[in-house]
Length: 175
Image 1 (cartoon, rainbow, N blue to C red):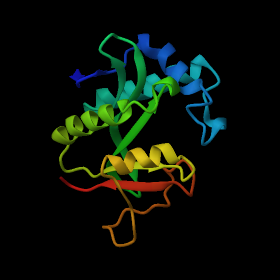
Image 2: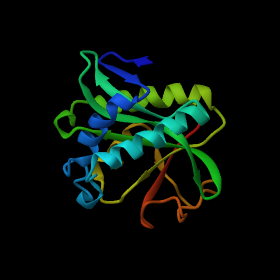
Image 3: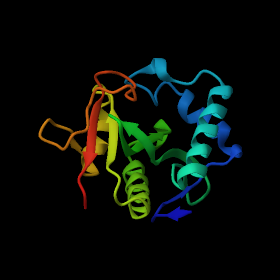
C-alpha cells in the first residue's frame, strides 16, 4: 500500500496474526511495562480483528511494516479513536527489538501520518505514551509531536480511553 525508501506498509491480513503475536508477546517490546506483553495467539487474533474493523469502518488503521525483502519488522499507523469525547487519529507503533535504532520506526510512522493526514485532514493527530516509555516519547518528539498542555485547545488528558491515568498525550501540530 505504501512504500518508503526501505519499507513497505500494508494493511494487515489474517496471515499476519503470527507476526502480530511475535511483536506483541516479546517483553522487550514492552520494556517500559512488560506486563502488557501478549500471552496468547488468541490475543493477537483479537488485535487483528480490531485493526481490520478499523480499516473497514474508517478506511485507515494500523499497518504491518516490512522491509522491502518482505521481512515483517513491526506495525504502525493511525486510527480513529475517542479522546476526551473528541474524535482523533491515534498514532501507534511497535517494532521488533532487533530493528530498533535504525530509523525504521521514524520512517514508517512519518509515511503513515502523511498518508492518513491526506485522507482525514480535519482530525487532530495524537500519540498517547506512557511516561516511562522514553523511546516512544523520543520518537513522538522527533516526528514533531508536542506534549499536550493546558494552553492547547481542549483535549482532556484524563479520559477513559487512556491506558493509564498518567499517560502523556502528544499532539501533532497542524501542518
